[in-house]
Each structure stands twice: as C-alpha cells, then as structure tokens.
Length: 371
Image (tube, rainbow, N blue to C red; front, side, top):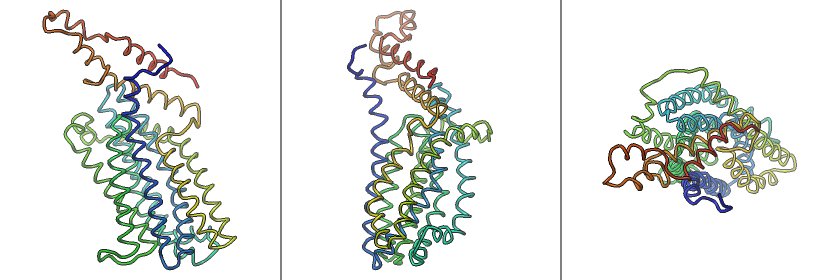
C-alpha cells in the first residue's frame, strides 16, 4: 500500500461523514439566530443574561443523558457489521425505552424546580424570573429530545447519516421559524419573549421526532431491522448503552459546567457583562457540543476500544453492500462474464480484489486493538 489514501475507501468515509458534519454545523445557524432575536427584545440585558444561564443550565443537565446516542451508535454499528440487522433494531428499541425513562426523570423535576435552579446561579432576581420561563419549556422538551438522540444514534450506526442531516435541517430551521413567531408574536401568535425561544426548541424537536418516525416506518427500514415487531426489554443492552455513554456524558458535563460557571461569575460583575457572555460564548459552546455529541476523543480505554470496533463494523458492512464501489458484489459483477459456467460463477463470489482484503484486514485489527 502506498502513502496516498485509497480512493474508494476515502469516498466511503466522506459519504458517511459529510452529512453528519452538515447536520451538526446547522446548529450554529440556530444559535446565532436565536441570540440575535432575543437581543432585540426590550430589556435586552436581562433577556440575554437570563438566556445565558438558562440555556447553559439546561444543556449541562441534559448532556449527561443525550450522549446515549454514542452508546446506541456503537452497538448498532457493531451489529450492522455482523449483518445482524434485527439485532440493530433491538438496540434501537431498548435505547428508546431508556430515553423514555430518562426523559421522565429529568422533565418532571426540572419543570417543577426550574425557578429554584436558575435562581441558584443568578445574582439578579430579574434575571432569574426571566430565565425560569425559558427553562420550563426546555425541560418539557427534554423527553422529546432524548427520543431524537436515540434515532440519531441508530441511523448514524447503520451508516445512513443523510437521515440525520435531513432531520437536523428540519429541527434547526423550524426552530428559527418558531423563534421568529413566538418571541415577537408574529403571524397571530402571542408575544412570549424569552420563554417563546424555549417553546420553539420543544416544537422543533417534535417535528424532528416526527421525521424520524416517518423514516423508520418506510418499508425498507422496517422490514430489514424489524424494530417495532420485536419489543423485548434486554437488561444487558441497557447496561451496555449506559456503560459506553458514561465517559462521553462526563466529558460533556464538564465542558458545559465550565461555561455555566463562567456565566454565573459574570453575573456578579454585572447584568450587562453577563449578557455579553451569551453573545461571546454561545458559538463556542454550540461548536463544542456539536463536536462531542456524536464522537468524543478517547475518554477511556474501554470506550475507545468500543468505538474502534464500531468503526470496523461500519467499514466492513459498507464493503459488503451490493453496488458499493469496490464491494465484493460489484467486483464479482465486473469479473463475471456471460460465458462463464455456473461453477466458475459461484467461485467468483469470493472477494477477488486486494482492496477488499486490505479493508477486512484493517477491520480485523481494529476489532482486536488494545488501547
């Protein structure tokens, strides 16, 4: 093998990665638009300061559970590489059950104690009052958001990242539209101010969930993965999802708590300074969150080893897909002529090219890697 990358493998990696990058990047547009709209309310300083605390506090709590997409992604990718498609669907079922449980555990107490929670970090009572309404709606939408996270991990795990990209476009751009309607009271809606931004997040996640549900009910996915036909709770799968997701959860919590503490300290300097932190740190927080929401850099040996095995599974599964450039089926079609006898044709089903052997050798090494 030379120093230059294999073209077929590079195309496969870019085909999987590019839609995921596009979907995560669209979150930046929402962040900037949301901050710009809230910044045009009458009491700009209080609104932006409240948004800085409330949004960071909500994400600091939910990031501990939203990383279950990583566990779902790893387990689904492994079963996809093994050609165990019903097993991948079973992982999705258990991930959705886990989302339901965690959503109830977070949403109900979070909604009840929203004001107390934000008041703990706010130095200005006006900021606490303004941020409580925003945070209540964010907590109501957390349960829906966790379902979206589970579906995202599933579709990324099977290598169909375009589904996630389209869902991200639906969620993020509908969020901008709902912000415009609810914050300022346009198109006949009531003028809600900052709480309208929180409601916009919840409504956009509902649309994203509906998109994922529509995708899973298409005949191709439903017949292949059989997720809704075999509803079985498996404790071992639930434990594996949690075990793989915990390192990423701690990483996300520490990142977002750092932003939250910074915003809280700025509030003791002044409300204006705290409002400025919303403008200056929102983009940095979102880009960091987007980077770590689907992949995280080696938090532990066990998590890194699991991620390497999932990568190997995805690569192996892409190689075996019919019609894929460089796959065994495509190479067979190229090498088999119409004059071959049935005996020779059956023999050509073995992987004929060196590219397939190279990929499978690398996949085997990734599965057994010791980190």
